[in-house]
Image (cartoon, rainbow, N blue to C red; front, side):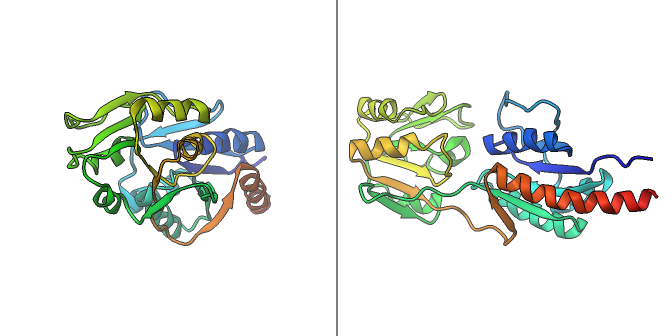
Length: 260
């Protein structure tokens, strides 16, 4: 009898998570990717099972892991999805499965950048001077933490509309970031932006706005990442494949021995 390939669960709906899911499925794992359901129509990798919705906290996630014979848990959630990171860590301990955190390297300022760092979104909201013309790249949830700043001339860009009524001075732009720093700079100029507010999400997909702010000589109010529990962490999909391959080899040996 041949043992079935081991199963893993990936937490996250990021670009990195989707790439990892496709690559791991190609490596021979049975892959399930968990999506929170915040994006209306995410691009999903082929050959990967998808689970939508929450698990009911760490204990619910641990129960799902045990009931579905998951052998490896990968936390590829957004760097600012702190609660999910804590739940994944706790669930891995409860279910006694290895956990790997797929982490994007944070952005680092260059000598030409004008960064002001804030430890949290709430702290950033209090640091913005009154009546500033702000370009906010925070997502719908993050933007909600600024809703009390109706004094700001704020422009925000997002894929989904906010779940609240924006103040009269605010302008909501529907869409995603451009990969072109020149286009991002032109947008900042057209909006008359005086300040860019964003989270240090890292990655290449949204880096252009940081370069655009440098070109426009605009200050950037950069929100630092929330702390996460200590876990084995890899950077990049290739490093994840190597580590998962090492763990998978050990699991296959154990499964083959149990079948004989």
